[in-house]
Image 1 (tube, helix red, strand yellow):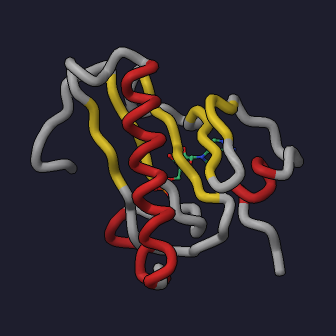
Image 2 (cartoon, rainbow, N blue to C red):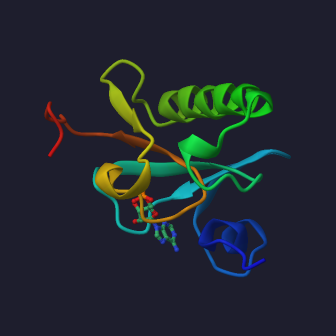
Length: 114
Ligand code: AMP
């Protein structure tokens, strides 16, 4: 099976600015940041979209949010605020089919999103 872009980052085949890693999750800076802080939180398990989550994966999703909470704190975003986003499929704006949680902060965001 062809490796996803993010698996290539996990396997150190493509460089990335890695800010967190454990045995299940990696986080690195988005290459095209949409805010002063823009991190991607990615499970090492390849799950293409949120539609593909199995019951056994929901604990992993919780762990991704635990990492988001920690990284928001580490980047002094907890009080000022931040946004977490999962994009799904074309209308959601997903471009990399290996689920990832965006953590964005350091500026005021609009609602509704564009
Ligand atoms: P999405 O559009 O939700 O699938 O998000 C994919 C994200 O991956 C985008 O924000 C891209 O800027 C980001 N991205 C693409 N290639 C890389 C890379 N080599 N390193 C870090 N981030 C990347």
